[in-house]
Every structure is written in structure tokens, then in C-alpha cells.
Amino acid sequence: MSATGVDFEINNSTNDLEVKILSNLYDMNQKTVACSLHGTQKIGLLCTHLAHSLLDQSSVGFHEYNDGDLGRPDAWCHECDAKLQKVTGDSEQEQWFLACDYKILCASCWDEAKELNIR
Ligand SMILES: [Zn+2]
Ligand SMILES: [Zn+2]
Image 1: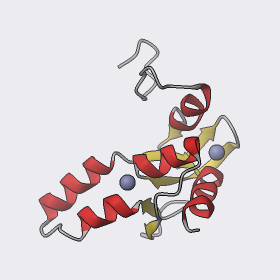
Image 2: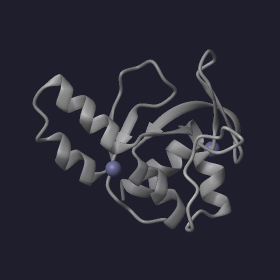
Image 3: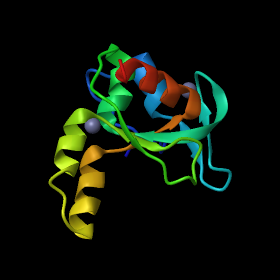
Image 4: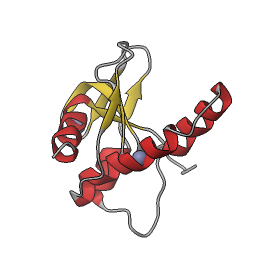
């Protein structure tokens, strides 16, 4: 936890764009996020690999599931999907969700990730 309370990991590879994408301020009541690139937007969840694919512009595959209560469906990469295929119970599902390390991104960033990764 950093002194500013911003919820993202600081490491040596952190660059400005990474901070921009991964440090969005989420408004839980409004279900919106203040994206430093796109402004106030609805949200979408991306697994950490998809979130980072925006940074290095690499394609990691795209899977989504729409539960309908957010701006965009949840989405995850091929690697996470392979793990999901082995999930059997609820507790394993929960473990899987945690392992994906979902990031809250704005809907526009989510759309960019989808476009990048469905190729
Ligand atoms: Zn993933
Ligand atoms: Zn954005």
C-alpha cells in the first residue's frame, strides 16, 4: 500500500502509461471510473494479462462473460481461460478469479483491449 492510497503495484517496470491504466479511480456507487486517458467512463474488468497487453500491445487472446451489471463484460486471456477449464467448484472459481488479478478499466480502454486481442 502506497502512502497515497492508490491501489496499484509500483515496481521497476512501472511506466507512465501503466500508472495511467492501472490506477483508475473507481466510484463504487456510480459504477464509473475516472480514466486518466478517457475521462469518466463506465467500467469493465480485464485480467491482469489483458490490462498489460494494452501496455506492450501484445495479443494474449480474449474471452468474455457478460453478467450484465457493468459497462462491459468481464474479460480474460487464453492463459486464464485454460485455467478456468479446470475449475470445478465455487471455491476454485474464487481462487481463479483472484489469480486473474482483475483490473478495473474504463469502457474505452476495455474496447481497445478487445480490439487488440481478438485479432
Ligand atoms: Zn489472463
Ligand atoms: Zn480509458
